[in-house]
Length: 348
Image (tube, rainbow, N blue to C red):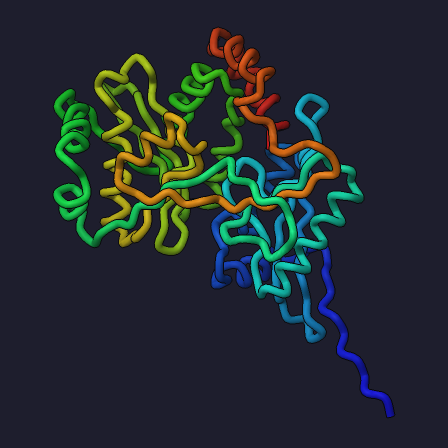
């Protein structure tokens, strides 16, 4: 009698219960808030993208791995399959074998749809023979158990002086989901000044409604005027500052310094152990700002596959984007806020 060969785990497209997906994601090694199932509807409803969520099931139906994929199509910017668009993480999670299978499946999906680029924004290296992007890093700062220890032992005198400056000007920081409108007011204006299309207001409203226990948003006020704001997500013992903005006309008072310090202070009070500054380009101005706080540069090992020469998603470093950025930065704010969300929806 011949032995019965064990069946291979099956890769299926997820279209089931959100809780089942999240129950697997929550304890999984390498998982992030970007892996949660609720992003599927946000990507589809708010941004108009096509989610293609994959999972691996064992013979007994046991979940072995998951991979959220989102297809972003644009006549202007190209055709992409990303895990996850506009976020920093989202690659395959699960056992090593499951992650390998899911990566192979992602390449197959990319081939079937004829995308220009597949990008798996994994937090850990993907176990597959794919190109590794080095264009983005993050900065991670370990937080002590007391804010005073970070202030006295983690910061030098210059940094403390820069934080005190906006405090002496009478600036204050307010936290809470009621700060969504104030955040977006600062964020949209700053994006226009940077020459970048702003993400839709509806996106932030939906994130606040769907992830009320994960979203942390704060605004710096000067005389009741919002002048700087930050938005991010708390996951396990880490907080990521996903978006942060400050208005240029108040830069001499350094509201962004008070913003970051206040977020760190609040996260320490809540028992957070790592402050993630979010992605940046190595050596750029944003990287230098983040590095001054004493964190450690950490690579973002994004894995890529492309059928042609496309090596990245649309980037401000491209010559065409530099021209467009200069023009966008001179656009009236009202017009930029009307056109920006339409264009931003097409950016991965």
